[in-house]
Structure formats: structure tokens, C-alpha cells
Length: 392
View 1 (tube, rainbow, N blue to C red):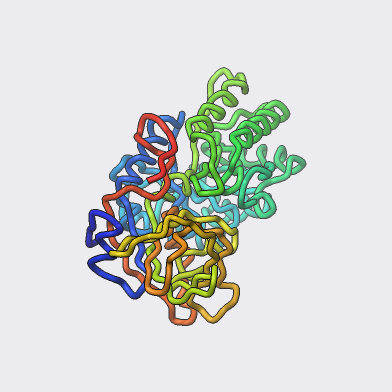
View 2: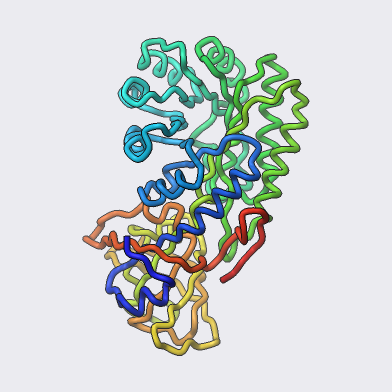
């Protein structure tokens, strides 16, 4: 992978006529160090967030050996990169074939579920294996999340008690998990989830071997400025202590967005300006899905490329290159008022889902990926020992 010292040097040298994706390994080093140093348990990387091999290898080299996988293809990818990686199949809806292959061909022992039929499926597909680690996922409120996952996943309180007893009878290790939703903006969601696990423990008298607090740890965006991640971790620690268990179960988490968002950005070129609408060469069918459907406001920066920037900033909307009117990003994206056709823009926080959601719709697709040594536009991580906000 070709490397550049900065995004400006990349644009000035390549002058690309296609979208360019950038990876910053130093950002991954800082984020993985934070979770390793502060989280009171085992850290799993959620592969769905960014499955690029360069990213995965960087995460492994920084000490993360455990992975949250959601499909057989993700299992194959991780095992190809690292045969000794420890995989947790945390998608609660899986085909019988995927379960069987993951168990018999790739040695996966940990499976999540949220209903009785999925439990039956796991047991049938593994020939009633006795070495399974079963994780019951419970439904909790996602009220503080930008993307709600609770409508699709999680056993309701009325179902959870009986399911937990069934899982205990059929597991080697028993886990309870929850997910606060993607880009969770309030730490209290984690304490509510842990409190619900406490209620289940009291009602069933079953103490799990593992508590999984899931993902949802946020990153920073121009309109989404969470409190420091260290506060989230302290909230989790405090809530676990309030369970008042004689021996605390193993604790795991599944960060995705918070671990890789800052590591990626996309460089786009302005194809046309119509007043405050900019038509660019990437969009919601490419690496900018988050800016379209969930309407995340991505940090934006006009790249110098020999031009003098206006000090006056204007709020712009973006349209992608396809013929679909859904290829639209509301923003607002604050950029110099004199931006015009042919100028380049860097859009940040795309290490999370930027590569994952790309399609080849209308033939618009770019797989140009380069490595950068400069800082991201926005950051939660100043160094691995403390967390502050840095705007580059």
C-alpha cells in the first residue's frame, strides 16, 4: 500500500479523478491502546465495522486477538489472516450451515442467540456439542443511540429467564449480552443494561460465566460530541460493582466504530456546484452511506491543492455521482465559500463502515486505498493514556 505524509501531499501528487480512501494506522494504535488499557476485561473487535485486511492486521499487531464476527465469510477472513484468532459468532440469527461450518471447520465455540429456535438450531448444527459457549442476548432500550438495534435483536424480559435456564443446561460457558445501539451518546445506557442483567441473575439465581456489554461506544462527529470514552468505561466498572457478586464473571465488549472510525477518510472531487449543493464523485452508494441514510454529519475539509481558501464558511449539501436522487447527503458540511468544480474535499470518520457499504451501482466504484501519516480531522484520542478532543 502506497504511503503519503499527508492528505495534501496525496492530492497534490495524484490529483485523482476518482474517490480515494485513506487509512491512518496511528489512529488504530491509539484507539486499541485505549480499550486494552482501560476496559476491565476482554476486547473483541466488531469485524463488520471495517473488514479491510490492512485494518485487521493493524488491529492484531496492536494486541487485539478476539473478534466479534457476524457471518461465515467474516470467519473465513479472520482465520485467513490469523489462524489462532478467537472468534465469537455474535449474530443472533444464523443459518444452520453457517453454524455447522464455523464449529466443525473453523473451531468457533461461542454463539449468540435470543430465542428458543436459534438455540435448537445451534445444538442441531453442532451435533449437540458439549463445549459450546452460549450467549443469551437480552433486549434493552436503545434510546440514546443514533442507530437503534433493539427492534431487531434481543430476548424480551418475559422470554429471557426461561431461555437462560435452557442455555445453562446446554453450554460449557454461559454468557449474557446486550447492545446499547450504534453511536450511543450516553453512558447511562451501559449501566441500565448491566442492571437488567442483575435483575435476571436475582430472578434465576444463575450467575453467568461471561457478561458481554456489547458495542455502541461512540466516535466524535461535528454534531455528535460524546463525553470522553473513559467516562463510559468508569460507568461500566461502577455498574458491575453494584451487582455485588462474590466473584465477577469475565467481562467482554465489542467496540467497532470507536476503534476504527478515525482511521479512515475519503477524498472526493467536486463535479459541479449549484448554489449550496455540491455534486461530488462519491456518495451513499459508495463510502458515504453514513452521511446519507442515518444522516451523520461527517467532518469535512477542503484540501489546499494550491488554492487560497475563503475564510467564510458556508453550509453545503452533497449529491453523489449516481443517477439516483436517494444519493443525497443533507449535512450541513461546512466548507470555504469559494469552493468550486475541481476542488477536493476530505471527509473524515469513515474508518467505520466507509469500506463496508460500498457498491458498484451505476458503475461508480473506486478501490484506491492509501496510507497516511497525518492526523484525522477530528479525534477522541490524544494519546493512549488519556482521552481529550482534538480537532486537527
